Image (cartoon, rainbow, N blue to C red; front, side, top):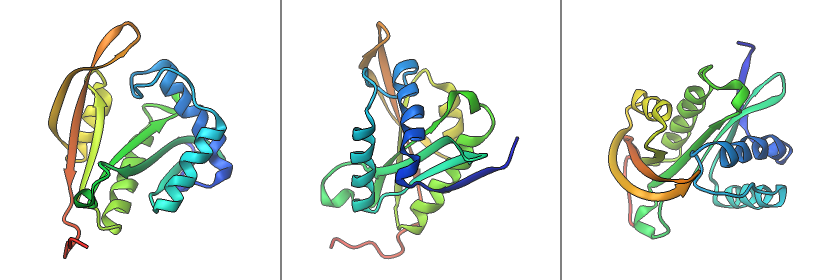
Length: 174
């Protein structure tokens, strides 16, 4: 594989991120949504991530965005402040090359540096590749929600997987 580079995203990366995300919407059950997003929606999403201090990392090969990963709040209440939910996506032309694993490893390390304690992944129950990827990084299944989504003419089950980190050292209620 050509040289893979992973770095923090910039606004210049949003077209590439949008292309990958819209492919996931239109062609997979990785995103339980029906309509493609616009560049304005991605700009708003990115601005919200920046304001909140949530990372967005991109994987590039020869300056092409081939994948991205991010996390955000799991729930809005204060006591969930040490828990995040992440998403990882890879361009369809670059799947099965280990890029998702590289991105997942980087977001786990970023979460650890940011004193996150629990990382949640919401994975479609039929996405065996993603389930195995998360298991490889020691995520465990903690919930199976039956028929919570409907897409492509069928009911979809959602699995929650969780990875507990050894951070933060001294959690507080502030």
